[in-house]
Image (tube, rainbow, N blue to C red; front, side, top):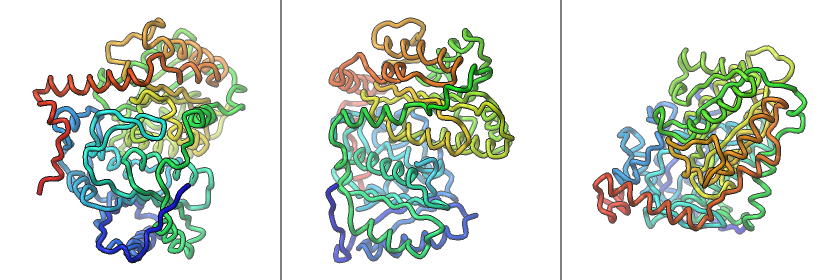
Length: 459
């Protein structure tokens, strides 16, 4: 990757630090202090720090109001309003939290998901993939600092991959990632200083679409041991979308999967991500129920190259429930269908790795992932019972995958490739998508020029 040096001589720069370090870790305060000191050394004379562990934030509901109703502003008015303004005014944005399944924990992810208003809905292409256009002309360097109790190179690699993807999303001029651990605390300052001094160019490692496809298929492939468990008797389905009941593509997909599992003689129960807003008794009970099945099947949208914050919280609680459960044979399976609003299924490759890490952490066998690109073709009225039109490959993949999961406990490779293949050319998807955003704005009484509003530029 190409590198750019950020020297201490670059003064008068401003950073925003979004921190979500747990208070029960004795070293959390020391790590935050080291990060602040190294920001000063890197030339950031001002750092606005937001401690998200003591900040109540609403979760992103995925309704896109910040694009087509109140362009540039989230409808939830809370501390995120100050966070977004601070990020807009900054030269660098820094994420700091424990590495969770190779990504960010749900506390920080809540704030990240709601940075969506910094983007416009309209599509463009960068580094071989579709992305949203930037709303503002100034873009921030992006840094992620993760903490682990012990070294884990695989988690650190996924964490770095996520940072790079996020930096491409936000057109960051530079980025950097470092993962520190409790066993090497004396090395923290040196590692963090090196990250700030030797930044990376976002997307420099992306060599083309074919390489991204290979990475996706490798991440989605099931653990070879997953097909040795025999018939699945009970499956829990988790709808990862935070949208209201009856409005999400994830729910449409879950209902289609449920029908196929029922036909295969598998008992099912369904939970939704909105059950996990807080870690209260009801959420813990839902997590325990999810953890008790032979197969946990997550169907979720892609949010900022990873899982939505509520979905992440659900998996954190399920992992906690699994840690308290007795081991049984066969080992339960975990599978995921992830729905991306961009036309390319390759956008889900990092989220697939995160899902696989969750399976390993929570004591599941990774049964495989179904990557869906161009998920905008699914509406609440879409039927997924027959292969027809733009949902042909979706239906075919489900017809292949669900019976295989029921009888063998693994997703077949053929269904992964089928789901990842879109019937609509990317250029047409982008064109129709942009028309759709304009139509929604028109229905909401907005002038077309309002879609490009830059409210954070106002004094």
